[in-house]
Image 1 (cartoon, rainbow, N blue to C red):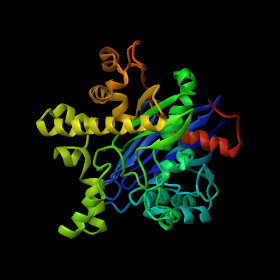
Image 2: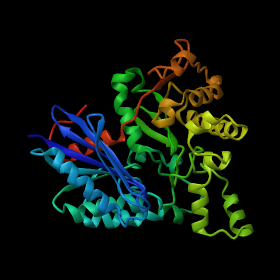
Image 3: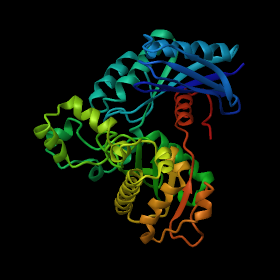
Image 4: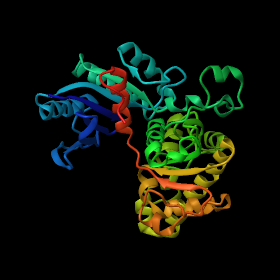
Amino acid sequence: MADAILTINAGSSSIKFALFELRDGLTRIAEGEAENIGAAPHLRIKAGGTLAFERRWPDHAPLDHEDLLNEVLNWVEAHLGADNLIAAGHRIVHGGASFTEPLLLDPSHLAEIAKLSQLAPLHEPHNCAGVQALFNLRPGLKQIGCFDTSFHHTMPDVATRFALPEALHKEGVRRYGFHGLSYEYIVSRLPTQAPHLVKSRVIIAHLGNGASMCAVKNGNSIDSTMGFTALDGLVMGTRTGALDAGVLLYLMQSHNMDAASLTDLLYKKSGLLGLSGISGDVRLLLADGSPAAKLALDVFAYQAAKQAAGLVAALGGLDGLIFTAGIGEHAAPIRAAICAHLSWLGLELSPEANDANEPAISTPESAIEVRIIPTDEELMIARHTLSLLSLAQPVG
């Protein structure tokens, strides 16, 4: 008999999850996703690398997060058999200024976290919905909240402040940083992947549909391209990234756009999708090859390099650049384009290693070491959950 931990990442229209068994450490034994919630729900679960369960519902099936999580829990418990599900760990995007480390959740905590929804309107309500669903479905199951902002609480004041009145800062209008679980995982891999970078100056580029970069010094976050919300910083799949606030004033005054329409534009219709008019998916844009697709990818790489250069200033130099997440791990042309913009740092990429997605992709002569390290936010959540429950020694 063994214990198991379920990790949950609940979004607006999907729930991603993974199941870890505690046998000589944390071992991923299953993973899956419930997608198209609110439309035509589709649940897929893989175990041992093969499809173990699949179910589709018709269009407009009246299923919410709780309904789909009930399906997931029923399958998990049947799959575990005599093994025991001891806890669920949740990814929660925003912890605000108060939630700076993983937390054993209770209803009062959830109520406080829900108040942060205005800071992450497209993420936080759905993260909370996943927690509430498990409170309803399995009241006795321990739940751990793991916050994407926590890793960045080591950022100095100069990196967190906006040039706004003090009253707004006290209200919580400040830079937080996101993708912290991913960055924390990458930092945890450095001792084995690149030990010479552990006590060094590193930029980690988490490049996916949501994208950001983090300046890490001696293992701690000192700055990030994302700020008050997960909308800031790099160009993303459908999000603008950094944008002159005057554009918002213009849209409000000249196009009569309200908060709802601005939210839809900035989060869902901009970024690579807005630039190209084709897609927010880098894979499709690389395959398309049209001038519009090329422009979108050129802007993505240019802005990424430009903001990386700002992080070099924050670090006082650079020793390593690490690519991670879907684009960072698999899109060799994007890595090459970003690194070409940074060649003035003495960074030299090996085209052969880059095209092969090898762990180290810089040349031996490069002044900056460039690496690819796959991220695993689910494992990071499982580690935090296990550690907080104090059920075993820390897992490496």
